[in-house]
Amino acid sequence: MKKLSIILLCFLSFHLASAQPQQDKVRMERERQEIQNEIKALQSNLNKVKGMKKESLAKLQLLQRKLQLQDRLIGNINKEIKHINNDIYVSNLEVNRLNRQLDTLKQEYAKSVQYAYKNKSNYDFLNFIFSANNFNDAVKRVSYLKSYRNYRQQQVANIHETQALIGKKKQQLLGKQSQKKSALQNQQKELSALAEQKKEKDAVVNKLQSEEKNLGKQLSTKRKRDSQLKNQITAVVRREIEAARKEEAARIAAAKKKEAEAAKTSTTTAVTTPVKTTAAPAKKESYLTLNEGQSRLAASFERNRGGLPWPVDNGLVSIPFGTSKVGRLDFDNPGITISTPSAGTTVKTVFDGEVSAVSNTGEGMMVMIRHGKYFTVYSNLSSASVSKGDIVKTGQAIGRTAQADDGSGGQLDFMLMIESKNVNPSPWLRK
Image (tube, rainbow, N blue to C red; front, side, top):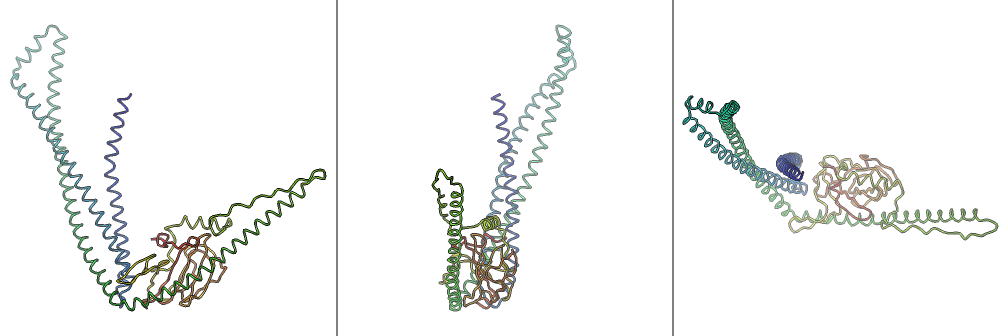
């Protein structure tokens, strides 16, 4: 039983080891297809911005993203070459093993032919049979001669089979070598493309650096707008906290009153039972107290991470979330800045929610929408088509984009907050 278990374990290990390279190959091909599709989509967007007279931050972001994808694509090809090299090595080992096996088969067959040649006389065979001590012994000797003849035939079949297998393995080896040659050519092609893309990116960076003064003005305008926006968002959040605090206090007071009334009605005339009050529930770490509907909305928002629709059609991220740098200029973006082909592009909410605020930041309109404990903020709008307290649905129009800071088209500043904390919206949006 133990021996059988060891055999089964060896078989399973071999099967899994054989299946792994094939699974890796399928995964690599799928990854490469996804990268190539994304590069194709990026190139389409690049073609749109290439027609602009000015070099833009949107173009720089696209080129940087394309460079990242190109690096991933080359890494994928390098993995493929490594796998092909491993396959070639294993195939060479197998061919060598089969050649040694063929040599052994040929040697054994040569010995049997030599023996048969020395004893080729029919008299010798008849003498071997008739020299048997009895009839049963003679039958055994005839059976042995038949088995020997079958053994030689099987030797020939094994030799032919091994030769055919060697031929097949050599053909597979030639196929692997051809794949390697093709992969190396593809690698060189993508490396050349990467070098060209780096040149193009460097040219855009140099152009933007030469326009540093103008870029600095744009950055100053955006910082001013971000500061005003932060103050307004802080005020909205404070109102939400105060409203949640009052709602919770009212709920606790109502619960205490109800308990007191219940205790009073249950008091008997003989015994006066002291009224017991239930301690108020411990305060949540969250600054917002969510009711049942808000909790469901927040949970639904979380489940849609990576699948939220874009707030505009045909939008490109021109300034990413967090810190970035062009020349000597530093950017620190609380959200993502999305460029559109022209001003006046329709802006849509990315999820169901309630409008918490609509205001003028001084540089455009701002709409803030609450989704349970999540908030989305849409600013730099030329107009807003919703009001505070409105219930909105995913994809509903809430306003239009204002002019971009560099005058190249429209622009939307989009922010996502989990309670009062700013997070990167990009991973939440659909690719």
